[in-house]
Image (cartoon, rainbow, N blue to C red):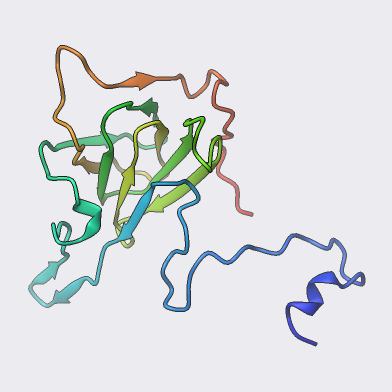
Amino acid sequence: MTERSSENRSDIVPAGLLDDPTVDAAGRLRTTGIDGVLLRMLGPLHADHRGSLLEVVDVRDPFWADPIVYAYRFTVRPGRIKGWGMHRIQSDRYLTMSGRVRVVLFDGRAGSPTFQRFAEFQFTDQTPGTLLIPPGVWHADQNTGDVDAVIVNFPTHPYDRDRPDKYRVDVAGGEIPFDWQLRDS
């Protein structure tokens, strides 16, 4: 009996839900769950007795197709959530630097094939990465660790101090129905 055929067995209680495949044969993430979102885990980490080196930006990678025009660093305090935020013009390009952070996305684009879908990404000191968040996708960042999480953003448009491209929704307001509790299952 193959593993696939055993998924319909009636002698196992509860039956449970079969996980969808998340990685391809090479271990790369199959999909981010939201149309237009790009995830790049960083690596490999090169380490020796003197320290380590980790490449973080290579403009030859399609992730960086739009030029780097502006960058800023922000932090999220332990146990805190920053969000929900959304842009109508710019894409955000996160580079996670340190700490533990859960980035949650919600697709608010009515014409998107992934409209109203959530996606979650976990980053740690051991698993840093980059995440491209397109316009119209709401995002919130939750620090799940015990030190500040540090993120550098390389938005595709420079910040306009007179007309900021920033929209907000309160994470506790219920407009975006997400349960921020961390579960073990």
